[in-house]
Image 1 (cartoon, rainbow, N blue to C red):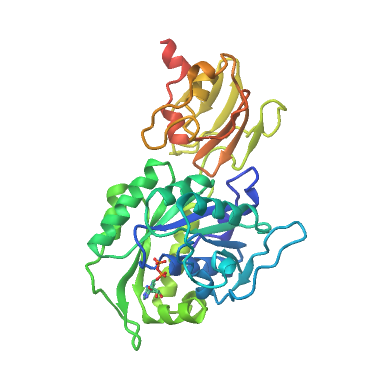
Image 2: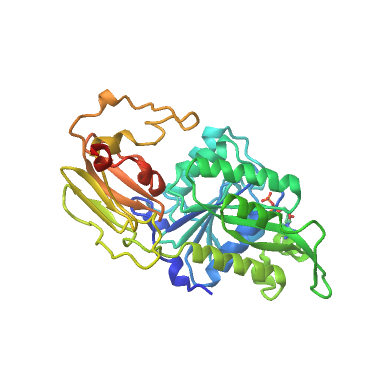
Length: 398
Ligand code: ADP
């Protein structure tokens, strides 16, 4: 079992670093048990001593308060600084649209409003220091979900599916979309995967089994586990006490615990330079210390970063790469510099000064670097896999 300590490491720096790891729970369609999985994972992680926040981002059908027994008939309390104080239940801090609308009715919101509300839920809520913030995304993998996934510095996403072919097909589409926009997939969870007999606790598989595992293997993403169909899950959800707390010894609670473990192991500090870091090149502070390559070190983790007149040098386990600073600036794939759908460059190269250079480089989760430049641009997130693909200055010279 993974020690809770591995999940307490903060991959983020910057204004949201106090939120710890931000993990989105997504599903291709509604009714697959996404919110139930989120609520149970949240309480499981809280029971392990982690400081957990949960944003009910399913603004159209906020069900988290009901599942955690949070009253929605009293408006949330504001802090003296004008921030919303989140509700708290079973050791989990919660913010949900239901707490603003006063009931579980779906809010009628257009896509851009959803993002605005969620930004408010994240930035205008007095979360305090968190280890993990779970986002229960609205069902589906359309534009709204993609915008949401890209609006926050996500550590990654978990996709929940049921074992039926149609549900798995939709989940697969969702996984591909998330991959396309560089949201790391932490894994797929198969829910309602077999039936738990209420009297003997034996699990019988009603639908064909293993579809989630197959998809995970085909797409090369982790398979986090299967949660059996269990009538007690519905009751505990209705009673406001998640099954992971109400019946911690039942097979479904065991499955939630295993998923929490797998998730935590996936979030463990990878080999490579220590994260988080926040390197201010202009001030000369925060530069990550170089590390030696461990045997069989992953090749997609930087072992050292350096910057001089030739550009940004990244030492990987298998090669050293130097990227020209202007090349780096032009490679920015943020929404302002590149069209997210077509991939077409929006940034006019003529507008980028010839002597542009990075002024600050910081870790974004364990999968990307954030880079601010001397031309004032600072919204670029550079996935490590993308950086590795940029032609190095030396390669061009050959
Ligand atoms: P979603 O968030 O995907 O729309 P919910 O989490 O609201 O789905 O779950 C839909 C319904 O399915 C709820 O009534 C919930 O109690 C039930 N449910 C979820 N997971 C299970 C399970 N493993 N076994 C039995 N019922 C479940």
